[in-house]
Length: 104
Image 1 (cartoon, rainbow, N blue to C red):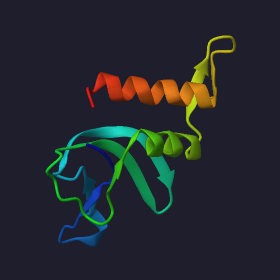
Image 2: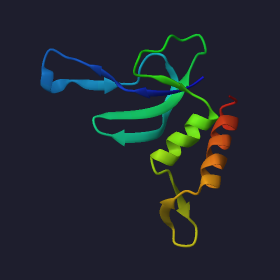
Image 3: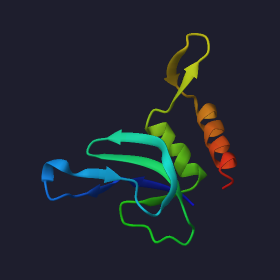
């Protein structure tokens, strides 16, 4: 299943040295980063039988399209060689390619 998730915070004895890690339930992740303070979220995959924590949610095609639209997903403009906001059609194509590539 496709999942939106946050990194886990791993505390150490010294609070200044806390770090983050990909949650154990994610089998493949790090896609479509969303940098909203204070929570940075990513998209990844988890086994269909996984019990997700409260801060993770299952995404279907439509919700992944909405996510990319809301984060201001960009594509490289071949004419100017600069990033620009993707069109709705380009976002749908990117999501379909992502789903197909990962055989979801």
